[in-house]
Amino acid sequence: MSQGKNNVNLLHKYYLHSLTIEKRWVRFYQVVIFLVFFTGWEFSSQQRWIDPLLFSSPSKIWNLFLEKFQDGSLLSNLGVTLTETVFGFILGTVLGTILAALLWWSPMLSKIIDPYLVILNAMPKVALGPILIVALGPGYPSIIAMGAIISVIITTIVVYTSFKEVDPNYLKVLQTFGANRFQCFKEAILPASFPTIISTLKVNVGLSWVGVIVGEFLVSSRGLGYLIIYGFQVFNFTLVFLSLLVIAVVATIMYQLVELLERKLIKE
Amino acid sequence: MSFLAIKDVHHTYFTKVSATTALSEITLQVEEGEFVSFLGPSGCGKSTLLSIIAGLIKPTQGSILLENKPLSGAKNQIGYMLQQDYLFPWKTIEENILLGLKLSKQLNDETKNAALDLLKQMGLNGIEKQLPKQLSGGMRQRAALVRTLATEPKLLMLDEPFSALDYQTKLKLEDLVSNTLDAFGKTAILVTHDIGEAIAMSDRVILFSPSPGSIHKVFPMPDELRSLSPFKARNHERFSSIFQTIWKELESLESGKE
Ligand SMILES: Nc1ncnc2c1ncn2[C@@H]1O[C@H](COP(=O)(O)OP(=O)(O)OP(=O)(O)O)[C@@H](O)[C@H]1O
Ligand SMILES: [Mg+2]
Image (cartoon, rainbow over all chains, first blue to last red; front, side, top):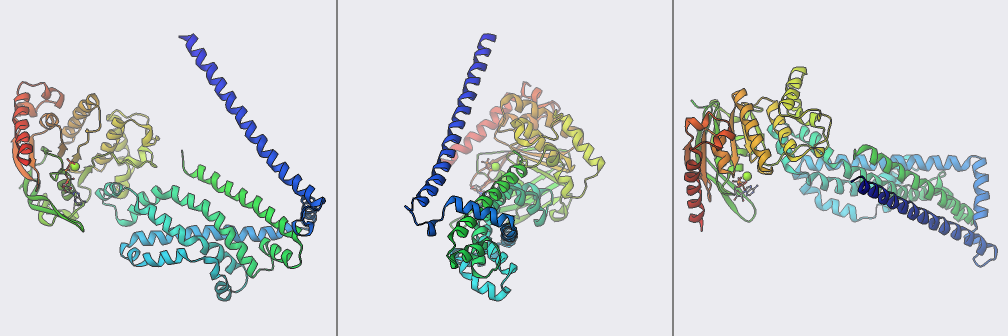
């Protein structure tokens, strides 16, 4: 009996060991890809296999990074873009959820609005940029609006679908206790759709970056999107790449944070 | 006058492609403290009738009186336990069983303690803070029953509450429910597919016939069975003869359909 148990323990240990080894190999190859990419880039730029003016090089980008970091301009631009993005995706998600709640509240309204939602969803929202800028003025509000508008319709559609899919028997239970429509929403519909709302939050982070960067292309005199456009105009592609890399890193961190929030909120 | 009066209820479901008459000419009285079972083939409108009594759907015709009053103002006088437990998966057991009290704004220390006590009486100790998925099917069913009883409804309706349980758990729960209801002097309607369960638990068994659903026959249970607990009633000498009678009647309904 105890013999058998020891055996199982031993096998379990082997199994865990094999998992750790596999994980290490995965990490190893990930690091290899990273190093090969950047050294390859650096090397081919130095050997002039690629045009250094156009493709810059990691060392130049790093130097520019240190320079811009020390004079504080990188952080202040990053701060601007980050603020706009955070506001954009929170606004997009909250507005989308509120709209979805309205549609759930009034089935009649949702039937009427349905084709318009489809049209709005199909339309490329960034094309609204110029109109927003004229309407809200060039500055934070129109850029935040860009970050929000890009995600609000798809959020509405996804969250409303999840509202509708909640098992009607949960509502029945509530109604037997005399619950009104608001109580039904609060006790069943909203909590049951919580996972969906959080996962749209994840998608919206990505979308809002697009909206905000495009918004900054159009109007701004600050922010990472502005740095990209500026670098492009003065033909400083090192600046363009620096901004791109910073966006990639920060957007990833933000995504991870939302994922962390997801795990915290949905008790599993 | 009787406690619950169902008067000439008809109900038809309308969909785009069809109109299904689920119930027709249902007239029935239930006395206070009585335990009534609905028995009948699948699709004969038992759940529909419960939903109508609970006020969840409005019948296309007919009326329901609870203590001589129409249903509208009778919120929370009726406890309805659906065919599955439908405990809210994101709420703890405690939050689940207090839900009815919370919604009807009756939640205070007294009612809360009463509900938690009931949970203990049902043999559910120390699980208040757990989520429904951590419980077994039988435990969930009991928790759902506590949730239904917590608001102290005058009329309790149970839609196949034990059908998903193993036989042993089912027999135990039958006794538990029967005792609890007796202790509170509650009126109850039970929907079941199990003839034995209907006989063992009820004062009256009402047999429904399908398409459209209507009352086919009413079987009053003899006093000697009524006074026994469900488990003992199942072993009583008269049990099997009543079982045979109802069985034959049910058979004739199903053969008549084909
Ligand atoms: N929402 C609905 N829309 C249309 N028809 C319905 C609806 N609900 C039930 N029906 C129909 O009404 C009839 C009665 O259904 P009901 O659920 O009341 O039967 P039941 O006796 O409870 O059956 P079971 O024993 O299987 O639970 C069935 O023919 C069913 O198809
Ligand atoms: Mg049913």
